[in-house]
Image (cartoon, rainbow over all chains, first blue to last red; front, top):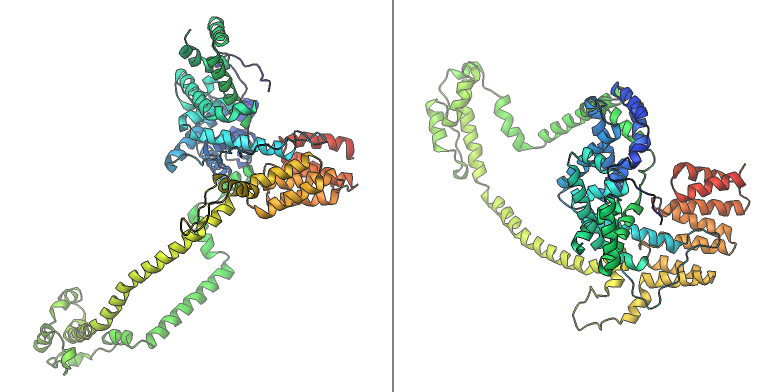
Length: 215
Length: 391
């Protein structure tokens, strides 16, 4: 799969949260701070996808992730009075979401659910793959393989330490820049870089036996 | 450059964050070192696999639910509303409930002699003139119910029993304080009667003490039964894992059952059934594929691949031109697995089958798909189909 060219680390890589113009966010925030819950609902709609994705990739369970995401937004609403507008709303929300996910995992005192790791069945002749049906749509086995691959990767993510997992999710799934990650988490840029490298190397070790045959 | 230095630079190299000179050094090392090149390939695959996970949407109505949570009244207000509202309904009901409780309490009091006797001294007090006369001696008691000696002596000399001293201090201004001796004698009588009842209580205690052992025995037997029941349930829930584990989990004695052969197990594993049906579908033997997937679903209804089997069933039927059957199969998937990631695919293919039959309801289905799952690949296909086939 061809990758889009990336800028230097720390550059303005467009993340999901940053797709919305900050002016519109600030206008909605102003209304929400005045007590307009519909304005806050609009903010939720704009940012729910990445907040939910962050929670899902950290927790590994969709139902729990939705509860966490809701808690994040409720927390944000209660803390709106403290948002001065000096930073982007998305950055401020990222900080809340990241810390809330970490605290939730710590409170649970456990790693998120381990997803099932699919194993090779060991048949002598694996069935032929139905890459496409006659009408060009992916066959059921391709869809199944994608789903199993996603479960595999999620299981590998679940094995990382929570702080490493968070960095990987913010960088490689959410597409945040190093600077934005450092600002959201309140850590040094060098810490982001080193933590990300360790996490990626750990993932390589976990996924390499399962991915090499597929490439 | 060493291998360690090269591998330490993988992350920066991936993110194109190395200065040009360092980048060239690393690339040169990778070209010269097959082991590091293999590590670099594995590194790239792993990071891309994580990126490919992509984003996810919460369930429909998420934002509205957040707003409802924001607008919800505080807990004390919700509690008050639950207790009192609506007034026309709750207040009469609560009054009726209080009345019933009061009547029940009265009934209990009437039918319980012990309870009446305990409360009798409070309701039947001697008149004021009797307070001046010396207190009467304690009535004759049977030996088994003799009152405590201290209480009897106290009653004879007209002083309150020791236990009643505190009470008397509290109610010194009340005329009832002079009734304490009689009340004390009555209390002593009741205590003596209570002392007569150790045997039944002890019997009950012995029975209670014996019960835990019996309960332990019952619990042990229940645990044994549960253990013997567990393996089949576990196999049914995760048939794939049980099939792959290939271990007999329920064996009354080690030598009672011969170990199952690998071949016979392989014939029954869910993966084997599913793969066989898939092979038929790939070979365009649609009838055999339909039979195979149906057998897989019937034998392993809880296997995680069942939604995929349902989808494949629909595809096999559609490939034979059996659009009504295909619609039914897709519908089964949608009904049984509403949260499955295959829902957009099933909706799209079902709509296509409907349109193939000339059923116009395929169009609103495509619109609904595009609205509910805007980021699914099928949403784009649905929008194209709407443009071409729907007014």
